[in-house]
Every structure is written in C-alpha cells, then in structure tokens.
Length: 213
Image (cartoon, rainbow, N blue to C red; front, side, top):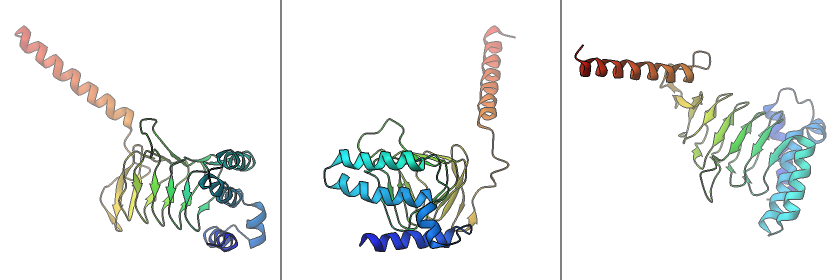
C-alpha cells in the first residue's frame, strides 16, 4: 500500500481512538506513537531489503526521540495505535495485525528460551493495556483484550479478555468464564506459601506415622 495512504490511516485511527486528540496536525507533529510507527515503516523496508545497519540506525534514532523501541524486523499491520507510548518495546519477530492498540509500558518480548520465532503474534483488533508483558512465540487472538499490568505467557483465543500475572482468560465471546477481576486477583506469593504450608503439614503427618506417634 502507498506510504501516504498508510500515514493517512494511521493519523485517522489516532483521531478515532484518542478523545484528547484535537486535530490531525497535532497528531502528525506531536504524537510520539505515530512518529515511532512512521519510523518503523521506513526501517522495516530497509530490513526487508537486506540493509540491517540502515534499518537499525533509523529504529534507534526513533527510540531515542520517542522512548518507543520497535525492532525493524517486527511486522506491523495497518492502523496501529500506540497511546502515550513511553517504555513500549516490540521484538524482532513480533507480528501485529490490523487495528491494534497498545498503551505505555507494553512489552512484546521473548523469554530467552526460543530460537527463530521468539516474540508474540498479535491478531486484528487487539487491545493491550498499560504495563502488560506478552512474552513468547504464541498468538493473541483477534479482538481480544489484555488488561493493564498483565503478564501473558501462553496463547489467548479470539474474543477474550485476559487479566493477571500470569494472565488468565476471564471473559470469552462477551461471557464471564471466571469470577476474577483486576481488584480481587489472587496473590501469587500467598498461593505459593499456602502450597508450602500444606506440603509441610503432609510431611509432618507422614513423619508422625513413621515414628509411630
């Protein structure tokens, strides 16, 4: 698609999704998320044409200016909106579909355990909340939402809402599948202590039997 057509779509999607945006000119000149996406489209072209140094030069200049780091190898679809954007990191093998929105502090990263495809694939129409970490070479399904602060370590199906660390699906196709919410999430540390307590109690009982108490 023509670069200017893509730019027009990118600007319009910001205007549609950000109620604070007052004009197209403001978005074009002052929105760091748009600047990062524009720079990435250029860097990705050089990356695909076997000019990795130029690609990295463009991406690193953009990261310095916007505090949004997108590897030039990442594949990004149309109408991608990074809201606020500070601290966003997108890895080399990440793939992002059309009409995706992500907020500040989001990482689309790897775990360090995978070779080749190391980063997530994000479907169309996905929203990823502020501070969320999506780590690994799995898929976030179309039209799914990841709540702020979540840590996603496995695939999320289409049309789901996932929350927590680690993230779990609480809504699918508009229906609750779990009573969990973002306020009353279980404490993972407390859960581990509970497991340890039960294990100690079990071992003490077994020891009492062996002693003949």
